[in-house]
Amino acid sequence: MEAAYRHPWRPARYWIAGLIGVAVLLVIVASSILAILFRQVPARGTIFGLPAVGLVVAATVFGVRALHDHDLASRLRDLYRAGVLLGIGLLLWLLVVDVFTFTQAAGPAVAVVCALACVPTTSIGLFVVRRLDRYEKEPWRLVMVAVAWGAIVSTSLVVWVETIWDSVASRTLVPGPALDVSTAYSAGISEEVAKGLAVLLLYLVMRDEFDDVVDGIVYGAAVGLGFNFMESVTYMTHVYAVFSAEGPGQAAFAAASQWYSRQVLSLFFGHATYSALVGAGIGLARQLRRRRHRVLVILSGFLAAIAAHFAWDAWVAYFPISSSPFALVEMHLRTVFMQGPFTSMVLVLLAMGLQVEGNALGRQLIVEAASNQGAVLPDEIPVLVRPWQRFRARLRAFGRGGLAGYRRLHRLQRAQLELAMERWHRERNEIDEPLAAEEELRRRVLALRQAAWTPSP
Amino acid sequence: MIVSQRDDFRSLYRTMLALGMAAVVILVLGFLFFLRFAPPGQATGLRAHVQGVYAYDPHTSKVHGPASTSFPPDQPFAARVDWSSLPPTVTVGAHWYSSLEQELGGVAPRAAGDLARQGTLVTETLPRSGTENLPGEYTMVVVRYANGRAVELLARTSVLVVRKG
Image 1: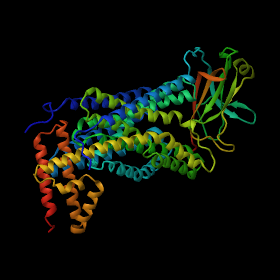
Image 2: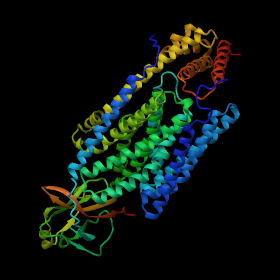
Image 3: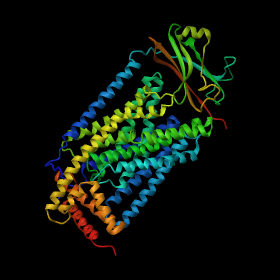
Image 4: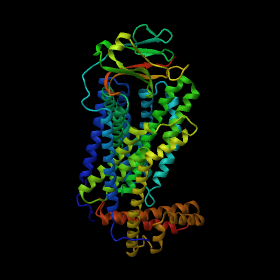
């Protein structure tokens, strides 16, 4: 057994991740104390949000433990605990947002309705984002951890920074373009850094599930969707409370407009795009050898995200929506014109990443097939490197063996691609696991192949 | 199937760096934009004194009652500023903003001396005629003008419009 990674065990990145985690907690604790001292209602939310953050941290610990647990029973137990803790944390934070920040007038019932309205759209967003990885999809548990961090931890970090920044700016700057730009810097920097930290932690801690630029984009977009979910609920309940003076119909219309703008029109254009840019930089750094290059691409990702966010917040007022019948068209055009270039860049990076990944996996599958160990057969390679062909093969398996046959082949294909990915990282000297891990994966593939060929009883 | 002999990250690397540079350009442009509307060297140290915000009667154009920090939605309000606390030749204006950042009336730029002589009140106007103020925070600012542009914040105060019931 030989470790491919040149450091013995527990490389420095675990310590860096630990330091970031401790720093995040300290910042939130400090902001909570400041919130009490300065008695600012929006910031006061953080003291009550602290238990929610604690619950998410505990859920993350159980989730990570589950990932490394080989015993199915204890893995399920840990996943169940993580799920319950995440759920409680999410609900608690929703309550905090509802009661202590903006929505006292709207009430918890409105907040729950708004949250429920955002669940289907955010779920669709997550489903689409996860499917962007055409070769090795990220585990749902990690995607959901990314969403939870975006929704709860990142929003908690942002509250205090923006409150202090905006409080200082509004006391010194004349309302108008200068104040708008200041607010845009505040939102761009604080929100993108807060969201990017989640991707950075995944990169540092979950290296075996963070393969390349594609994974970075997926995790980044997931964090952005989580943040967007919480922000949507906050804005919807806020405008509902403001417009409730004009009657429930007007209030519901205002909330629905916010929902459409944030959960439909900007679902992929806004926070998902910004955080995906951060993720792309971190994902690319995962595979670069020189530290200087890694630092540069991570910095570029953060800067791109901050600039994209800043450009929207600072200059959206220069693209006003008229009250004509074309207002809806104008709203869409504005989003496409202002955010489209950044989303296009994410898609370009994604396409380039998929090409590199596809070529590398194809190469590793050929080498694996040539080794004659039986995990990958030469005939399977053209199918494995094409998602559509894989799907067609699974459909044929469904025709032969029903749902069980479909699932068996799905598991086999996934394990084969994981083996190819493992080989790729080993070839590039990018992984921690000893060679035995690759042997274990190969044994798993062979066992799954055996199962796939054995007819169901 | 195209099989390359080595992974080529150069295109990705260069694209990321190009994005980073484009981002720097955007952020620098933003800063220049900021400087255009908040040019350095405009601080005079002047401060306007806001005496309070009062219930306002649009029919008599007068305020009544004690100063308050909260009002019901159907109660128009106005701020009383001590214009005499400013040099009479300084050009100043004042504006009300709703929590949705809509400008809701105020005082057009004039010499502080003129405003002091007339005892000008800074009144807010309802969002739409015949309607009430929406709940939320309303902010009034007093600003100094130079070359037709607001350049310095001289005072700021906020009140809450609270929903009935």
